[in-house]
Amino acid sequence: MISERSLAQPAAPVSIAEAARLARDVYGLLIEREGEGEGPGSVTALDGEYDANFRISAVGGRRFVLKVMHPGRQASLLELQCAALLHLAKTMPSLGLPRVQATLSGDLMAKTEVPLTGGEGAESRLVWLLTYVNGTPFTEVRPQTDNTLINLGRYLGDLDSGLESFVHPASDRNFKWNLAQAGWIAGSVERLTTAAHRSLVERALASFKSTVVPAMTDLRKSVIHGDANDFNVLVDAPSDGAPSASVSVIDFGDMHFGMTVAEVAVAATYALLGRRDPMAAACLVVRGYHETHPLDDREVSVIFPLILTRLAVSVTNSAIRKALKPDDPYVTVSEAPAWEALAALQHFSAPLAEAMFRKACGQHVLP
Image (spheres, rainbow, N blue to C red):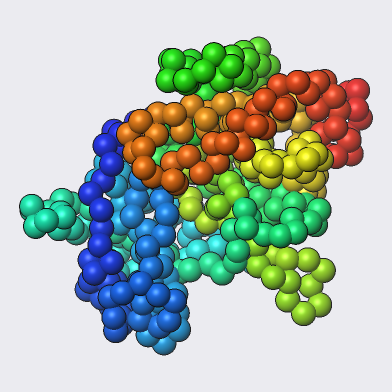
C-alpha cells in the first residue's frame, strides 16, 4: 500500500513568472508575456488544495494546464495519473479528458528546482502538463437540468468501465479520500467546533460502520476517479443537434483502488448540494451511472450511507485544513452546503433512500 508523505505544511507559492518559465523551458511553449489574462501567451493561476496549477494559453491558440506539485507528492502518484489517462485514451477515446503532454525530452513529468519567495533558495518540485478541457464548472452551471445530472452519471459509468481493466501499484493508497478508510475521521471529531456538528459527523460515521463496513467484502473494487465534485465536473454547451450539454471531469489526483460504487456516491453527494430536493438530484446521477455501468443490489444498498460518509469526511477535512490555511477560501469552498446537506439527510429515512435509488436503477424496491 502506498502511504503518502505529509502534505500538512502548505507549499511555497509559485509565481506566474516561474510558471511561464517552466512552460517555456520544460515544454517549449511560446509565452509572450508573464502576466495573467485570457489571451494567447498568457498564464493564469488556478485553484488547488495542495498543488500550484496554471492555465497556459500558448501562442497559436492551444491551452494547457501546468501542474507544479506539492513537494510532498510522490512521483508514483503522478505516474498513476499519467498511466490512467493514457489507458483511458485507448479504452474510452470518446470521453472528454485531459491528455498528458510530454516534456521536450520526451518524459511525462519533470523534476525541477522552483525558487522560494524572497530568493531564499529553491525546492524540488514535480511538474507535468495536460491539455486544457473546455467547460463550465458544474457549480456555476445554471440551470442544472435533469439531463445534465443523468449525463454526469453516464459519463462516470463509462469512465469506470474504461478503468475496469486498469491496474497500477500506486492506486492502493492509504489516504483520507478513500471512503473505505473513512474511519479516520473518528480521531478528528474534536476538531469540530460545535456539539451539533460533532453529533452529525458521529451519526454519519455510525451509519458507515454499521452498513458499509460489513458489506465491503462483497462490493466490487476497481480504480476510480474518486472526486467528481462540483468543481472537477465540467459542463460544455450542447453542440448543434445534440440533445443536451456534454460532461467531463478533470483532476485525477484523488484516484485510487477502492469501492467502485464510491464513484457514483461521491458524484451524487456534490450534485445534491444546495438542492431543494437533494435526493431527486442524487437519484438522477445514480440512474445515469447505472445505465452505463450497472450497479448490483449490494452496491445500491450502500449509496446513501456513503453519501453521508463523504459529507462527514469533507467537513472534517475542512476543519483540519482551515486550521492550517485559515485565509484560503478553496479549503472551505463546499463547507457550508455540506453541513446543510448532512443535517438535512440525517433526518431522511435510510430505507426510503435505498428504495429511491433502487427505483432509479430499475431494480425491485424490496429485493
